[in-house]
Amino acid sequence: MNIVLLGAPGAGKGTQAARLVSEYGLAHISTGDMLRVAVKDGTELGLKAKSYMDAGELVPDAVLIGMIKERLRRPDTEKGFILDGFPRTSNQAVALANELDELKRNLDAAVAVVVDFDVIVKRLASRRICRACGYVGTDADQSCPKCGGEMYQRDDDKAETVRNRLEVYEKSTAPLTDYYRGCGLLREVNGDQPVDQVFLELKALLAK
Image (cartoon, rainbow, N blue to C red):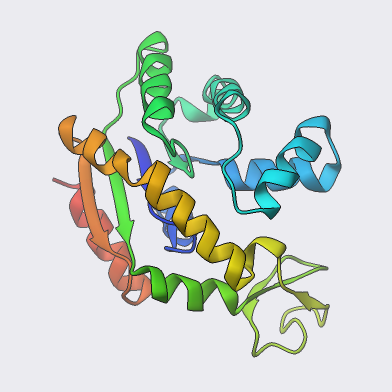
């Protein structure tokens, strides 16, 4: 099973992707995670990407497409994969389709997790991350409940940046729903529900 998971930043794609990976044994390909590791490691790619990420802007296509092409050729993707955070534009979707053609693979579904933007701003602006273990919590956590470490707010989770990210998403990424609808691959699920309910609906959509 090969899946593209669509949705605005903060829609809950990462949470659902992790559950789908566990349920179906898919390779989880998250461009966000790949880029954050590059930033943390201070690689040339990471330094280039950081300025775009901190401003809530999209990393250039050439960088992302190159990363995805390399990742899709790894052995763990042969049983199936879930793409989380890519493609984000119609051009990237076409590039992905061409790459899959070369690999003789098909995309089974493009699932959009739909959440109102006001809900997302509130959700992300309150998110906090533990510097020590990476635990994801909220602004109610004075310290990490897992390890006692310091909780901090990522630059791209600040309310102003979140709104900019959503504007960029609306302009560049939302047209993907039309692209995949035209391909007969689009499935939509309401992401403003309890996590377990969203997952049940996702599984039902993928079983069709």
